[in-house]
Length: 411
Image 1 (cartoon, rainbow, N blue to C red):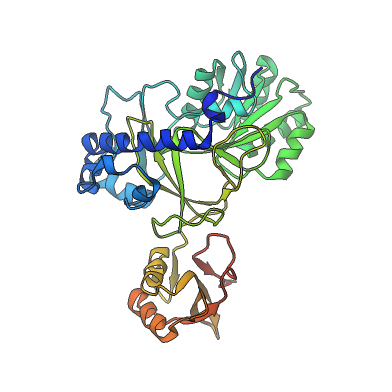
Image 2 (image 1 turned 30 degrees about the horizontal axis):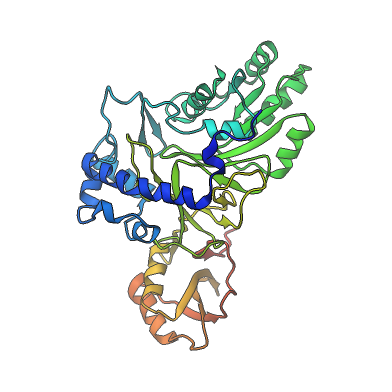
């Protein structure tokens, strides 16, 4: 039995990078030609010239918040989709609501690769406990399982006793769904005195998968792995038997950028996950900001897969907070930093001073120091609030992706 889904997973990293960057101009040209929102947003962009990561980094980031606003103005997809009714197989709604089309290509969401890495194989019966209505998660995993040659039981969510009964009767080899619901099913089975020995593998998503739960599943003979996917772009990265981070999917080009900006951060630094869907003709999202924080891991996975690895989910990039009745956004912190080239990194810390809100911009600077009065003036100009400045040594700020750190406590 092969250890890898296909030869793409083990190709030379330079060959992969060349292939991805060769596809990038084609996808941008396709988006400009067929998606009105990109025709407008990228009107002055020569698609053929966007053939490097540096060139890609000059394009605007489309974030979920902007996508929501665009969709409200131009239903159903805000001008970002190239498909139409009849051409799309399904349409889903995520909270917002934000609508997503599902194309008719095999494994539209690219979940078969993640399922394979989790041990699923052709001929398996998969118990799918992701939702089948409104949101796409159920279909995402079902179409991936079908592409792999599996049969799927559409369990959906809730009805725990019936889930236990179906698993006991049908004896599926694997489970897909949230990790917490799998634990609920197993606890209910114990309560009912029903053994579920057929379950030996699981692919989970939608929430955190702590090591404690992973080990608890393993103790019951279930090898659980996680996949990082979104309703907008499908699979982004997935866990492998190496258990060292998540390997980036072969169908996307991933960047890690400083929150509030579109600027890529140095390798290993925590930032926002930004993804370009390179092989989705129906919904060709270019530089889609997921709002999730992660960081690139150095080196290749011991499992033999050679693509870039990320640490997994490390929090949310949207750290907007309210100070003295005014909203302050990560983009404003980035705007302040951009006016002072001596600042390498910055973090706005918000706390209480004698009961009143106080904000201090901690800035990493070199030997030349920082123009504190100038930065204070910029803070006031950009945020309309008073702020202090504190100089820090290079590398002193934590590498956790936080741009705004709200330390206020509320009783």
